[in-house]
Amino acid sequence: MQRKRIAIAAVAVVATGAAVAFTLPSMAGTTSPRGGSAPRAAAGDVAPQLLEAMRRDLGVDDAEARARVDRAEWAGRTSARLAAQTGSEFGGAWLADDGTTLKIAVTDRDAMARVRAAGAEPVLVKRSEQDLDVAKEKLDAARSAAGDLTGWYVDPATNKLVVVAQPGNTDDAWAFAEEAGLDTDAVAVKTQERPKPLVDVRGADAYLINGNAKCSVGFSVEGGFVTAGHCGRAGSPTSTEDGQQQGTVRASVFPGTADMGFVEVNGNFTPEPVVNDFAGNLLPVAGNTEAPVGAAICRSGSTTGTFCGEILAKNQTVVYPEGAVTGLTQTNVCAEPGDSGGPWLSGDQAQGVTSGGSGNCDDGGVTFFQPVNEILAVNDLTLVTTGGGGETAPPAEEGEQGDEGGEDETSACAGLPNQREGSLSRAGNAQAQPNGGAYRAGSGRQTACLDAPEGADFDLVLQRLTLGGFRTVAQANGTGDKELTFSGRSGTYRYVVVARSGTGAYTLGFSTP
Image 1 (cartoon, rainbow, N blue to C red):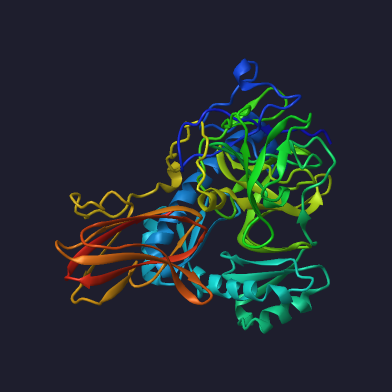
Image 2 (cartoon, rainbow, N blue to C red):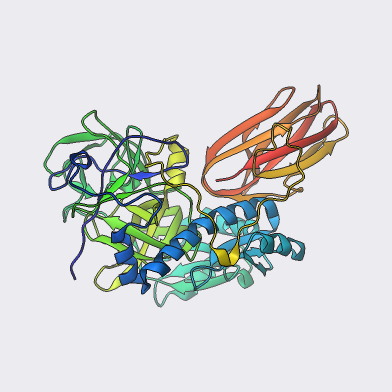
């Protein structure tokens, strides 16, 4: 099998927060983008190299590949908006087998009309995503007793928590779920070979850690690049293949809550918003809209090049030999040692960096990636981007509807996409929003604005659901209107408005990643 090598190069910063890029410092065997000899694919289109990989791995033609990419970006934005609007009634989102039908699970029939109005297909389910997330956290808390199990995740399509066992070991999976106190009706068991981090000293990897271990660079950020956490501990020096000193690992998490790392490069390297395929082509990265389950996705790595497949599950806990890692995304894309840290794309939208997996690119396999938005949020990093990736209009067959109107356009909060109103009649009272419940948010930046009554002292509190209940992660205090921003990992959140003094009606506006 002939493999196309792909790497990541680095360019000038154009935007923050909403844009992502691949990065690779100058390396032996690559062509500098400033040299003009390497053509760039247009931002907003699907690069020819990715189209070729999607044809090969997904069995689609160019038109079908472009349609799936466009649909995935629209579905990601739409599902995030509906998750916030339906709150604790939200049961998850996924693209059907056709790659275009967006399905949204809800626990209440009244919410189904809102889903249809947004151009998605509602599915009535028994358990909310919030319920399943709480069940998953019970397994996360008991992971020391997981034994030879390989992981677990929430599957929105079946509305169950899936426990993954090695072949022939399903009894242990059921026992683990029961010992954690889960209702077996909410659990399914699947089998899969044990994954391992995809790092090795073999192959033409993109950069070296401590002068020996090799990995692939991930996405460009101001001052460096993001990669997998198992690709070096904080303080480890990095270099190019030919020994040129490159930078230092400044942040690294593995195992545990993530497999994420950040390398700060020295002044000889400039992060650029492109992917270098080592064949004279630079692929642009124009944004970081998160694709849903079922979306087509492609990954690149310096060992095997570019391969494509589909997203199978999100927020999976994966048990590596080194320990469990939570919050990874499962795919049916292959990868091999040396591909670790490499980038994942849905069209020109950045998704994550390679963590580990099982199998290989001759026989196929399963690979997990660390979502990039979480790396950026946790480390307060700014993405490098082409700046050409605006939001795409939804396909004509299922048009996206705008948010319901009627908000007071003079309100300071009216410009935020999710709107809620409430009233507090006495000091000391509090209300949870949205609608007394909670909402599901992806990793990244959240913004809120509280338009409070004149002269009142209303606090705005943001809380995240944990195994021990809701925990405050951010708050804004004092008299007058409030603004609040928070960058964090994916999870179930709620806002609480608290009347310290004064009474009256308020308006809450908020946005989610």
